[in-house]
Length: 150
Image (tube, rainbow, N blue to C red; front, side):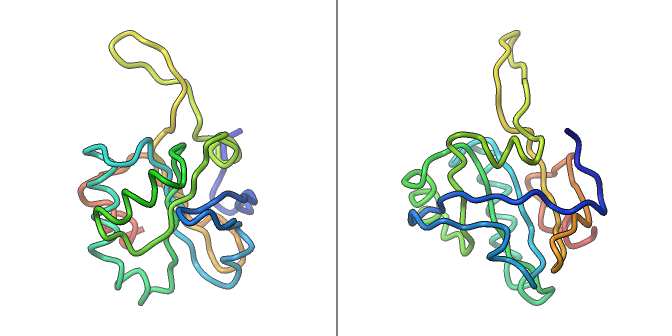
């Protein structure tokens, strides 16, 4: 399944770093940056999260909430948030249900080994739950600028 701009964003429900359930409905009436990343505390994922952190006030001024999603569990997310002082929630998609709903749980290849993982992708969702942009070529070091220019 490939999502397209203009379609309703798939509903989701998953636990955040505190073990609280968050869903798409919690962001009704707000714009949402929903970004999928492979793993907490790795170089690319840290650069991406810190880029979003460093421009967080601009996102708030533009009316956006930010939500990150990876297969890591809530405890790992909490450590990642504390280590880098991240001001937004991270969802623990340990069963890949959210990633599958958004079509970003894919077969990958590294050093000739095939495995399943997250295709780093960001979805911008408007106040009505409609996809307004999909960024599949993420620049981890300048991801905030990428989104704000979209």
